[in-house]
Image (cartoon, rainbow, N blue to C red):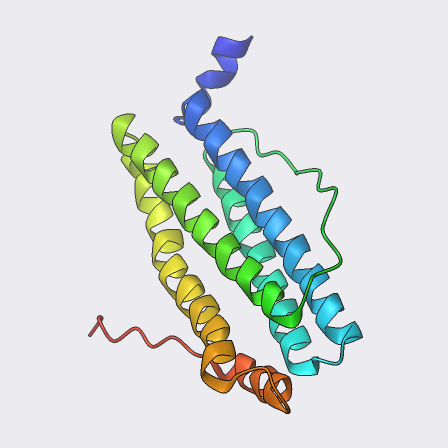
Length: 178
């Protein structure tokens, strides 16, 4: 039966597993960003709370894009079980440090998956992943700039307020495409 199911998809078991692992990673990121939003809201960082809520929505969209691809290719997309989401954070700054680390981890995961696709000669999935790889440029850039605000503005006095106010205004401009 297993061989018959494999005939319905061009995805190898290894690629399908990697895609489902990424679905879970995106779902975990969505849950983490929602927890960050809640933490920021509870601690009076309204602008950052909105920013992280939007990030949560975006990660869920990424998860659904991957889920649809696996299904469209005849694979078995798995709805992930997410537990143990961190809800407390050490400080305002630590929230942004963790966000940047999360984005770097996601980039590394997509790079590993792209490498697997090339080795398996799965150029359809490799091409599909290009959107995510490009998206990670923006995700890391924005997370890095947000964290840099702590160095530029400082955390003394009204520093947290100024940082909070500026976070949602950070935008990535893709100046490399014409």
